[in-house]
Image 1 (tube, rainbow, N blue to C red):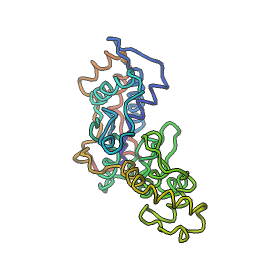
Image 2: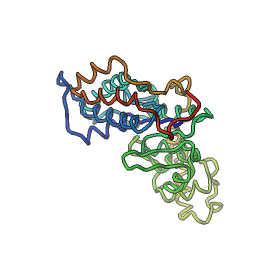
Image 3: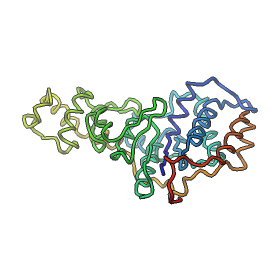
Image 4: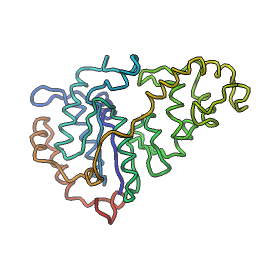
Length: 302
């Protein structure tokens, strides 16, 4: 069987900017929520059987205590922020497991879920549904992969190396020097993607890089300049790597059986009525009757 772990925050942002504004019966904006529900339901209709969705219930996390410049909810439209609790309740009513994050981030929940699911021998593949480069650190061979559903792009370990020039385990180090504008940390001056890719393809982690730039691999251009910047900003680099490193200890589920979708709950009817989406209810109940596809099931129940 396959496990699909979905970045609910990314999906909500994506649909907020992709679909027209739509109010529910109470005048509350729910356009993005309806978009995400349709999207998740389409996965179920296509054969997905074991699903978990992680959301940033609040944008701020423990990383804001580590670095004051880390991303916050400042600038996020209130019409978007207000839909997070609505989405979480709606997904739960549809029978989908949801992990609303407050202390941790949604990415931490996805990373923890992927690591735990991969330990189960019955799992054929774990698909982390997000294009977020942070999650590339979680990819393992062809067993734990990233799926960009919008572009229909599947990225395994070889794909991570092709895109970044480094293996998954070096992604936090790579981001430490390159920076991540989405998360609010700048990286180190002069360290671009090409330089980082060349460097960490030779030296997997920051600590592996020789202190003497003359010992660096000859493929790395401007080694002296890069070395001076790195070791002058060493503490920043370590901090940025900590920010980029996803946690694997977030409590997400007990066993794989917890992730099996078994149909909507009785609350989903009221939810669909409130959102003026009767078709979602019809589709959800129809999906319960569909046998799982061969690619998403096995002879071993979970």
